[in-house]
Length: 517
Image (cartoon, rainbow, N blue to C red):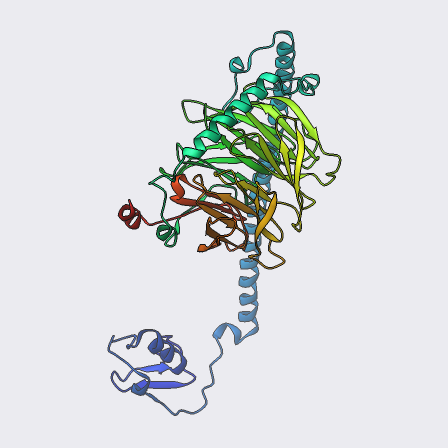
């Protein structure tokens, strides 16, 4: 009697009560567990429906081919023939694979030769272009550029780059006039009615996450927002700067050209200009075009170490860069010319952050040696120093009211009163192994955001009044390190960068936002 499933003589025969069919015990039990029915009739079947059959020990008969020597020789011959056929098929597959590999190597070699020839032609073309520019220099507005920094002109020779014409009296007069106008406006300025209220910030949550940078080199180090166009810029470890349209939810442009991580990005409020500083010791000036792309107009190579910060003056005509080479440079934006480079003999560690005061005549710089230095832009003199931090000063932010300065370092955040030049409050928010990476006042000066292992938003108080934490947002990157934070227009959202490749937007959901408005 044979099993109804395998057709073989069962070693442990069982019979179904319902169908009377014979099965191998292990086969029918597995079938019942998987399907719960008879494999032949399809009727429901359980373990209780099968009955073991007691039989004597079964001795399987020998196959006829193994019962005699000629039969065994024939069986061995068949197995040998099958082995030879299989070996022949494997040799054919090996031969085909070798041919494909040879063809791929030939294509790779040919591609390398083509790339080498193109690089040589590119270098020759750049050499001819540099010679032509030295013989007949063109104004910056007339120099052509190729989109997104794929190829940029070397706009000045080595000698020209090292020229330091200085800050002229006319520039100082322009800075002073801007300072007077902004100071007068500040006295009349009131908090805009469109500013997000405190109860709205208390309900902020993550609205979206956008993978902007490369997966093999994740990490966002800097964020800036064009408030008028609602465009978010990020600088990444992958050496790219990315411009992201928050309203459209799409990448508007990826600016390539830096050879190392982008440490600082900054929008210029006028003329659609964008600045990026990098660990490759250079600063790039990008000009926006009508098609939405950005062209690299100038590559500034005045620093000898990593550029850590870029900050734009309130006139939108000048900007400052700070570097680990212990110097900061004051540039004319239109020409890309370094007007002056200020060295600090007492600062051997270099600068790690920088920011202009809202009125434009004061520059704040943070050093790797835990000191905050305040500079008079007109005289380029160091007028005040703030000590007390531990570790490098990672971020600086001036309040729009002009009175408060927030600085971040490894030990937390300190608030300074610029009228009395003293520290009036400190926040030690994280443990000793977690540095505070970023601070940012919103444009109205009503809120302060701090980024470390999470993101915290404080309501701005005064020297004596408390600064209350109104919202704590978790770092959802999983890295435990939020590197940069920036308020959107009217504090309606927060843009956050972390050590993964995602830009995260925190704010009110659409339903709540429409109710608030």
